[in-house]
Picture 1 (cartoon, rainbow, N blue to C red):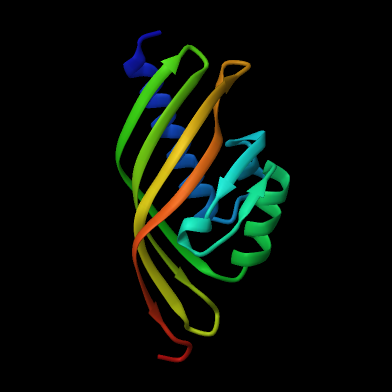
Picture 2: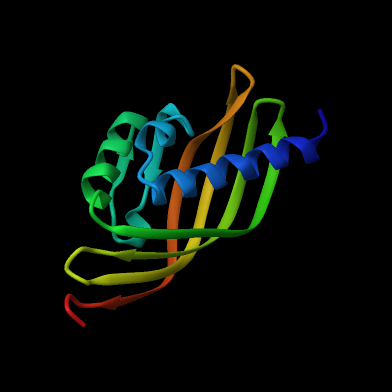
Length: 139
């Protein structure tokens, strides 16, 4: 299989990540990650979580009642070997909490991917932010 086909599969993987987060399909979201995924959001004010089960549980608790809209754009993907790849995605996201507070953010995901049993998964992800707009509750 050529690199363009592998890159297309990686684009589908990231699209599935965004869709499952926004639709709160936590079981399907768990499948986009390797078991030992490392999710680093420290550069954007968050934390560092290791392990897919822990990360999905964190997202479910944090975003359960929020409306989220995630868009990934302009992927730069490099297939390093038949089972490894890396990519950078431009990101725009909106989070709206039940009290009306909202965040509109812009940044990038810097990621590594691993192909396990013929299926690509996210192995690591670092979220960086260029800008965030906040609106307080009830505004």
